[in-house]
Image (cartoon, rainbow, N blue to C red; front, top):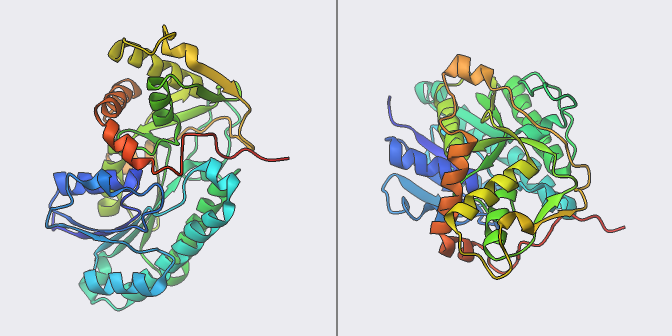
Length: 358
């Protein structure tokens, strides 16, 4: 395959950095990483590849049109992969404004600058240009039954400011494809986990709190169900869709690992009991740290992805089961405590976010 130049927004984030590491380590493609470096963007996640000649970093806000225009003109990408987004549901409850700005306005700016750039390309480069928008299964809302799955045809019914903003951005991308013929693709993924995950998210939060003997907070009764996707599997899928997916199509990406949140937490505790048997005084098993707290406002009960389409049409399936992936994840956090310490800059102390004040 001819090597491509990918402009990746949000490349210093959790999923974006995994995509970039995968591209640089396993392909001949090159990357321009466009990231504003907000609280969850961390260049330490890219230390292993930052000196590679095929990697370039641009500290740019996707909402600033003239800077995005400059990046397009300077680097002449073949593919755009748009991951830049505010992404934590609890933070969207505390401050929805930033989610509207980045996820909706930022996507609009990127679409317009991509359209202008694309429309002026020569025929061959124009014919092969792609805009891949990366989204979430949370746009679909809640699944009622225990056997239902989100498909690419499931109607949108977002529940939080975060998922509503992502749904809006998905609609913009489809509109730019239909109205302006911009060659776009969309992927919607299930819950990601793995190395380099910012510690406000469930799995790293539980690992780090357990090691410090802190409470392991579980929302509500802990029976909310999520489909867990190992981030390196997702990275492979995203590049595969960007290179081989059909223009105008949507592909759901799932891990085939449905688990209740309480099952996830107890699994982590069991792995830690095995890997870190010497605990702080008074702790016999990490499970005893589990604490049930009030549920999140508007908390969806169940998400689950039907990933049949991407398997059948693009021949992609995940490599990791939850059993193999969670063991790798826990071990990574045990081996990379310096990264965990550095990523928490003092503004986030693993406190609960998204509590409505009455």
